[in-house]
Length: 418
Image (cartoon, rainbow, N blue to C red; front, side, top):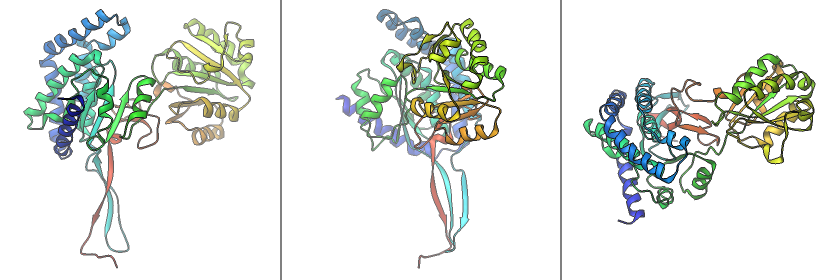
């Protein structure tokens, strides 16, 4: 079968399964997710044997230690997937929720009902645990999912999908509700992106190059998250000890993630007091500082920032630092170089905090808090399928509700339109 036909068949099967999944009760969905958790533990040896095939191939190709670590389905990773399935099962089910009911002058009652999106297409790299995490969230939200993982994790992803499909079948649910595209040909992604009749939403997770490729080649709506260029602005009225804690946490706790701090903006009125103190702490933590001329004058150990450092997602212990005149210059800098991910202000002035919240365009805007809080779990979503930095149809961390939409529902008693 030609590759295009293979993808068309898989997409069609997933769409048919989606109708059944959309109508499952909360009880059945929760029972299914808990059965999947048990299934992963029961089939752990099989999963890890298949995972070893990917690890062996990765070692032969010379994958880095970090890549192999992301690829490995260790006992700890499998336990985390099991925990994740149980946590999703415990979350409130948004499907069927009715809101905004009102009686219109005509006599009809109009409201909204929350419904699944349908078929979610996931395109992702490296981490095979995404297979289970995505399936859990999609199924609980009443969606079917078609998964295209990285070629380096094919055996692992197929093994995980097989276990999940066995659990679906045991509940008399169409196993096609969770499918992994079983080919490594990169053209499979392009074929998948053309299936607009079967797939309702594409969610890519990976590097900026992957996401831009998907966005440029898809006929299907794409939830995009190119990069996380997160800023912190230390205002003139900031409590400086608190500001230092927030900056250090944002940059050093996990520098390789999308909500890590990448640029520090400091009001010129406090730069002389703040930068030497926080600079010593950052350098002691192994951070390389790339600063503007005013920053370099206050921090001799800083390197001169290049033009490309503003707007750079370092994903490393590197921090760009700039002294600004005021709140307006800070917000202008963020507007020019930000990625609509997460921005924070450290300030003691209520008016400045409110202006920052209103005027800064990002999916998360914070006052006196670390950018590292920008996460579905930290926001109370329970789990997230990703972070959207585009505004349609979701903005920011995406949990169960963001994998649904609303339709209008109308109750009448024989009313007709005059």
